Image 1: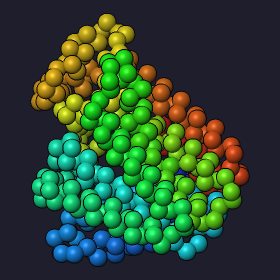
Image 2: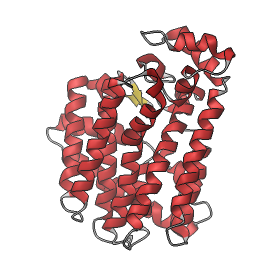
Image 3: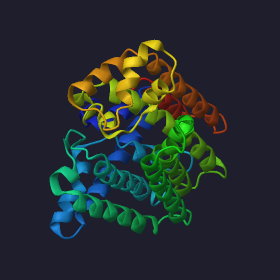
Length: 342
């Protein structure tokens, strides 16, 4: 049997997460294999065949399967073997993949998970339509889950769209940039993580209140996860990221370190601020220069501090849950996010 590290890249989070929880690790691996099989089976139902190829493109390329993993961990606070838990995990990955289809169109991205994006391979229209199909398939599966599943999915989908629109519109005033960033991140990133945890708990019949506690944990974890993505976009080369390095700079989307530079502070960031305020985005040598300057800026450490603050809040939320391997695993997940390298 292959070790965890020898498995797909997406399992690396699980390898680090459950290194001290072998029984939970084995159960998660078996469950993730079942989720993967169910996910691929759902995608093969797409018709015509072109649609099946398109919706399976990013899924088969890999990914961390973070949202299904969180769904399964949420289910650990109830009966993880309950009917529908696997479908609940599939729902979260379908929604996430749909959001990637739409995000890549908006960002004009060409690489995702180390392969060409759907929009780069089939065009924007197909990318948007296939993303819509994924959302519809998720809704179809949710209809067969606990009664709370459909309204919770609708809320999560609404928040995803709201976050995307807020990001497009931008803050009303320059001084609102940081509050605006956290509003966007909460909707675009945290909403689906908190939904995943809560759906898993509800589907597994977890005790009253556990699902809401997990939702709170997921909100903080999701913001921290996005900040770590912002940091990796600056520090990691494209071959490690699986997507184009510094793409946010090219399309004018400001991650937290960029916003902290724009807020002012270090006189040594004057050149960097001048680059970051150019109206047409940064490309080629200018983008690489900005990335180099960002890597040496104190804004990186300040962004890291924001991330650790959110991880602390996530850990604090966990204290309301019963002790045991699932809670320890969620606590360790905070360490994984803090030390992410991909």
